Image (cartoon, rainbow, N blue to C red):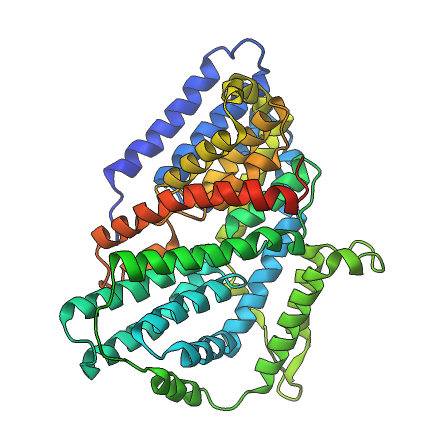
Amino acid sequence: MNSYSNLKKISLISGIIFFIIILLIPHPEGMEISAWRTAGLGVLMSIFWIFEPIPIYATALLPLVISPLFEIVSFQEAATPFSNQIIFLFLGGFFLAVGLENTGLHKRFALKTLQILGKSPNSLILGFLLTTSFISSFVNNTSTAMMMLPIALSVINVLKDSKLLVDNHNISNFSVSILLSIAYGASVGGITTLIGTAPNIFMAGFINTTLGLQIHFIDWLYIGIPLLIISNTLIYIVLNKLLFPITSDKDFDSRDYFKDEYKNLGFWKKEEYIVLIVFLLAVFMWIFQPFISKFIKNLSDGVIAMVCAMLLFIIPVDWQKGIFILEKKSINKIPWDAILLFGGGLSIASSIEKTKLAEWMGKELGFIGVLPLYFQILLIVTLIIFLTELTSNIATTAVFLPILSSIAINLGENPLLFVIPATISASCAFMLPVATPPNAIVYASGLVKISDMTKAGFMLNIIFIFVITIIILFIGIPALNIK
């Protein structure tokens, strides 16, 4: 059993003390008392989210307790964000991902892709990067990394036994490159779609709830796809060409290995066809939702996700035996803690808006308005990327999106100009194992030193600061018609 660290003890006590002190201090002039108490709640939740003295999903429930007791907002107002339609988009997406995992369809796709791309060490690394990022666009990035890791470790072992790489330096570089390509591919792949990663889901719910705006699945692809292509290119260059190059003059053709692994899966099963059809149906409806909704009213992305999830519960694999793709035990595979985290984040964000705390902070921080727009976005991206190295990405977005939105409004800018780059940046922390679950997963393999991850991650952090800024200015603004 892990001991309860001194840091956690200190953060638990200090979080409560800071909250009490804020309650006792008179609220600043021009700020409502409810806004000042919301600030106290925000400080408490931020400390608990950063240092995790209690589970982060438990922290997410604090608005349900503190908001009504301290007359910030009513219990109903604090609880309503937990039923936001975006949460059900996320829930439906999780059910689809569980369906892919239950049938092994995601592994079949991965092995087939790697069979095609496994001609040489370099192409194999690229294959893992592309495969991981694509799967992570639709499947939770943690699950994707967990699936790809054992495949990568098998390949590394085959490589060591084959003696095709001439020295230990090449083997080490190959191992680090292929494992970091999984970690980083899972992170950037999640950015590609609206359901790919937690910050994207939270952002969609936030702008819908507080700003009355909606970004559809297809709308986000205008940003996500260019970002995915650019990100994968840069990650491959940094890992395989700059930091961990492979200098072997021999070819390592692993296509036969993946071909054998694919054969071991056997013939396509009925349940795999069912999941594939339902999955493609979901993607089709998400892409063409704006057109289909003209004929089917109230057809949101969340409704589509839940419809397709229910199909996996309803369509039988074996009618006589009562076997379905999703069954009662599938519920246990859903990360309910993440769903509670979304609800809590949306709840505190809603309170920050309703009590006009965001408006007050926006005015106080309005001094950045003297800077050019591109520099404003650059500062926001830099702050979020490096802050997320130490904090949960969803916690970071929950705390900062209301503030950034209000700052933009006070500067006369479209809130999306600040909200979208901040959201993307929250998924681009590459330096530390604690930054993202995929980073932690590959680090746990024991083949990636923290110095290797820090070296590669810092370089990518700096690169992505400029990449995200450029994509927002030259692709995001025209694609989403941001004025």
